[in-house]
Length: 272
Image: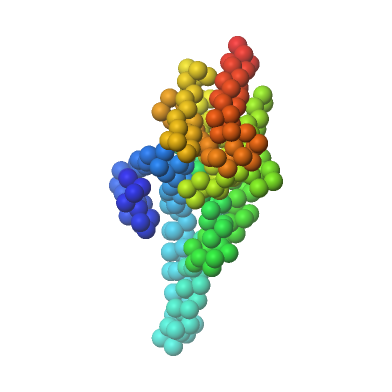
């Protein structure tokens, strides 16, 4: 699945394919799309969770019970009322259904090896859309509360580093690691989302058997500096990030590399 073709996202087609094969592969280019692949994987995992937990079947069962009830009570005269009532019943999943699907989505992306912050970032973005009157929330209620729940899943799963918000920015924190905050919005991604993506990528690095601090690489395009581990994008640093930290862009990039090298070395020492 090439995410460049998903405009708009056809959830029904994706789920139909998943039902046939039991698998889905999200292909994306980190430097172009950042963490969007992880977000998409989280959303797919969430929707598959609805299927696995039979939420749609339960909605159909409600529909069937409602049809029988209205037919018995009102006959044909109740058709209009029936349609109105059933539309309300079928408007969306319950709060419990959404929470269960969120939990399944988080489990799915973790087991598949995607960025564990992916579903959280997606939910945070959708939460912002609520204030724009987006009709997605007619069937996906209470995004703010679900954001907090997903943050709890991350903590309970012992995903680290964690992310802390600071004034107009966000920073990565972990035992022996405190990176300079990110302040800029880059390619539409706010500082919080950029920081969460980077924290998730660093978490995935901790699962590598041969993690080596010397394999962090800097690449500049003349305006921005990208930090990689081998060919895996960790974060793109911007001039605004640098100025907000009272340093040059090269200086900020060096701080990141040196801090991450020390973090990797400390982690190896703790394991030995």
